[in-house]
Length: 291
Image 1 (tube, rainbow, N blue to C red):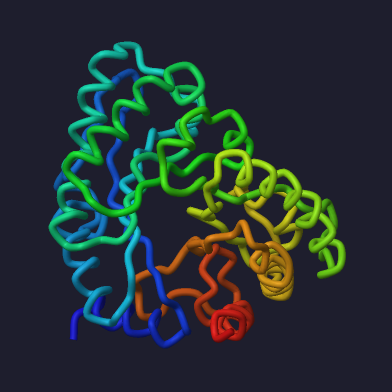
Image 2: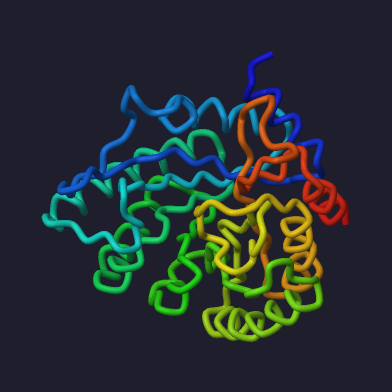
């Protein structure tokens, strides 16, 4: 059995109903063009690999969000601004529509058309409004955009999408090992803002990404990849607090955990990455998803 089939089966066994498939494009430093489907990329991040992953997910009865994402080496994509805006817009459109057509051909339920382009969504919302229209011409499912946690309130085109998409790496606590009560209190405050936006635009909020590393201070800067001491309890408490608070709110559509690694020995004790595989957090996730 192929690794993607084995891993999709494991995901389905964890009481999961949805999976996000994320093919990658990239923009090299000093360039503006979005490139993709290159030979050096991991197979699962290329076009054919994304197709195989979607098919494997569907075979396990999982619903899919296809989320093509652009990576800029040595830079957060939210800070990126192209030297040649016209070249970027043309190549970004081609990249997005290629995967939107794939999503439509495989009956993918949700398509996320871009991720964390904070500078560009604020300065050029008209481009994204046009991109949404072009995506809807070739794809019949639900459409969203994945805004960074500090970007979502600045987006002006939520009314043209089906969900308010948020990559929910909100800073929640300065504590080395925050307890559940502290984290729930932070989430309750954020819930007021998220609920208000949901009511304003009349769209549910979808956490297009959320997750925690199994390290100390995991809820301080959940987006941070810096080296830190392993702490599996901190990761499981952070997940438990989220599921015990905002996950139950009426404005919440659901979300996608970052991330599942497609290696048979992924995760486990001592692994400080985001994956919950082989860690106490997996039990917490399975428990809440079972509800």
